[in-house]
Image (cartoon, rainbow, N blue to C red; front, side):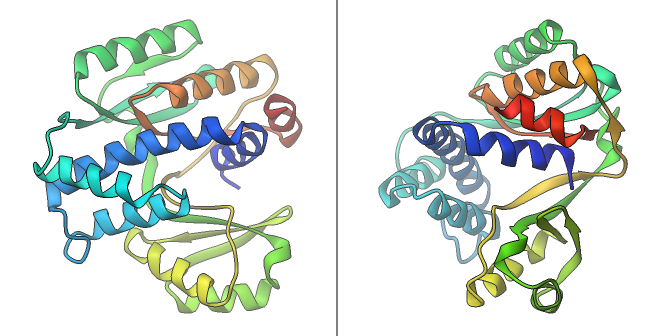
Length: 249
């Protein structure tokens, strides 16, 4: 299983629901605004917007919040203009990190993230330093109790998934970016629930990290993800389950 995805799952079970909801809403609102600005406010003709609206529904975001964010993006309502920024970095243990942010002030965000890095054993890297290690994919995580392996494999592969594998008590499914929604719809039809369904960056290789370096790395990832402008953090670490469990508790 993707080390970072496993960390997010473990951590998510421990965090306060209200805090998670507030942070999630803020990030989704920014995404809606930017994607509506770039591709228009009609989800029928803007597939990226359609996907983010689906994510907002899964997070139980009020529909009025969604509509207002889209209108700010299309210019029907006044609002802040955000730009997409991607940062590349290295963390403790030589782990490759990619950070996707939406910001209204790139200089401020860059300085703040550089400060987070320096305090926690990471450092910024030049463009192209680590991005070559990652490929954008759809990713789903499903608990084993939700379905039998053969039946689940038939459902997801028929819907267009690229691969499915078992990891402990979970199934991991990867798809091409454009096929994620098809696979989700097929699972919904069969009433199979997922823990994670998202577009992510899958690393071509991983770096094993243990001991204090692992704890320092997880603290760095947490600090980056908690920054208001950061939408996603991707990393290619492989940390033993016992360390992940200890850190998430």
